Length: 392
Ligand SMILES: Cc1ncc(COP(=O)(O)O)c(C=O)c1O
Image (cartoon, rainbow, N blue to C red):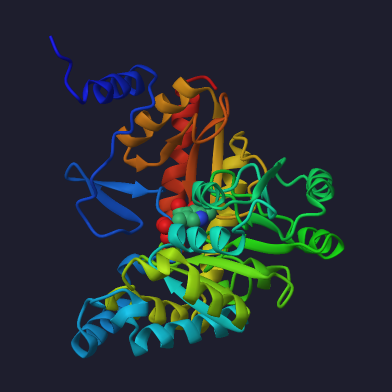
């Protein structure tokens, strides 16, 4: 019998199921919020990157409606062909002001923003890229697409980074690339030290601020503002898919880098522009970050939850941000724990190998500004109940 052309997929899928790594995707039947409806039932949402609740914010929705009436919905083309609209320029300018950078280029996602930078700046095997071992998948793929020699340093380890910088000396260009806030551990890159080392070894610095925008710095301006490193970090990659509440990406840098990306970056040249609703929502999101105390509310919630979950005896690694890993270490236990939480109406993701190393399984909690104190207390109570049940 001739095997089906796709029998290899069946085998791979079965393997994932057997290894407990098959991802069952939950379907949300309501808008994103502190609570969401799944299978017709409200669940406390501790999974989403909707840090400020902007995914369903009334002010932002009204701005989106206004812009749709004025500009329509779609951009109609790739930006370099006929897709660049005044609103794209308006948002680029506003993001540059927000980030205190010279210039900004919009892309369709944070993933695409990373893919735009590394292969464009490092296009020869005479170049070198030096990357934190826990960097996001989109950074890893951007490195794979570039022609540069690759060096990976141990997570947050500045001695190892220096070692790799020494090994990379003699390269035509050297780029250090790091996540700002690490998406699984919630810890923060030591950006001041990275900049010092970059100066010493004449390297460029790129930070992916996906989980820093709307979170760190004054009014959520991000990690560069948090460490007061304006004009010292060469390239900031951003996303509109987390605190901004929609979809899109951008790169903020000096004018030369942005001009070069507009000429050369393949995701800019060969994929269409951001939609009008995304752009309008991002414009309104910046207004809210600058003119309300929403970022402060996020930190009040974060500090409260982290302190209380630690008081219950849970290990949260070195988390310093609203991303709080609740470490259970064991893969199976973590999956069971998340299942029990879900039955108790708490929706929090179990994260395990290969997303994190083996035996480093955890429930990842993400706190939002729109959680009430009662919501967070509800979650704490359920975590404690299940911990007691499992005798952890
Ligand atoms: C650190 C980091 N960079 C980039 C991305 C990709 O962003 P986007 O969802 O806008 O493609 C993510 C999202 O998962 C992320 O966590």
